[in-house]
Image 1 (tube, rainbow, N blue to C red):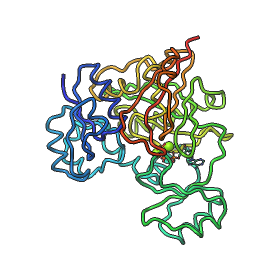
Image 2 (cartoon, rainbow, N blue to C red; image 1 turned 90 degrees about the horizontal axis):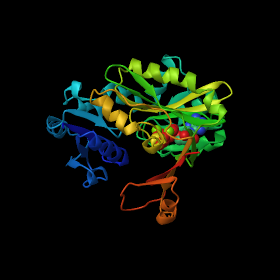
Image 3 (cartoon, rainbow, N blue to C red; image 1 turned 120 degrees about the vertical axis):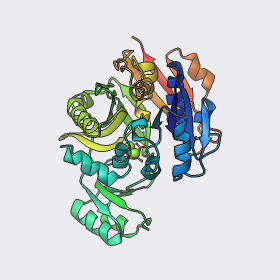
Image 4 (cartoon, protein in one colour; image 1 turned 30 degrees about the vertical axis):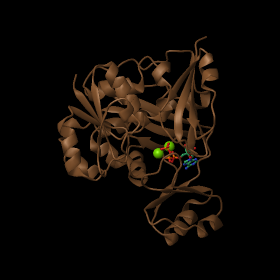
Length: 348
Ligand code: ATP
Ligand code: MG
Ligand code: MG
């Protein structure tokens, strides 16, 4: 088969490569860290830095199609690649890499984000806190993940004492939600859109802890509106592949949190819990193939992340026939690091 290029060498790339292999494709990952965990299951091109257009062009020459498992790939060097080879289109990365542009874009399509204001300095933060109020969350506009680069501001005094990093920031009002959920869709090259069931996502300290299906009524009731918005985002971006939008379920309806132009941690349950996994559907989409069914393959599913250096009893987990264990092959466990996940299927 042909070779799929994957920009980024993390667990998402590893899981895309496994799904691609099943369909007869070879994968080649592009990553700055030598021996990425994705390279455990496919070949790697190690770049000196993300920002190297020449290296990226050389990598791309060997690939029939190129996708991303990491949304912060700099868009500049992607210009060295024939845009027809890239899926999704880099405009999706560009929009999603900056929390300010992503919120403006989604609001422009009729979505509702939390109240927000751009912040560039202490005076800007004071003005934003004054306008939006507390509690709120100050976030870096770029590069944040797993709750990194975020400061909770419970009262105006918290803002005054902050030593602001010298990067563009955004201040958001704190959303009072009854639940968090995500819409994960896959859009084929022909424009066909399939939605996975929306899981109820629970975060601990800003990091996804569990995704559970079926979701409670508070989520189910808001899924149609959230899907409507996610579908519009996909159409507006001419998107091909898996796209994720995170939402807060509130009394006033779904509030948009953020989007990820890629497969998503809250969709790992689809490997065993859906008719077709998010990874396989992503590969099908970027390779121009028909999409697979996205329905639930069990009565219920729960995905639990294995985070940090907590000791786990693997044999005990595996002794339960409902459990499926995924380990990412990361050598060093650090606090907050995603080491693997367990998916539990409820069959009756
Ligand atoms: P990810 O790993 O999902 O990319 P991230 O670092 O981009 O995470 P966010 O999704 O912005 O972080 O925030 C992480 C979590 O913090 C959210 O899932 C939610 O639980 C909480 N959170 C973030 N923003 C808000 C908000 N405005 N109101 C209430 N809770 C929030
Ligand atoms: Mg994020
Ligand atoms: Mg998030």
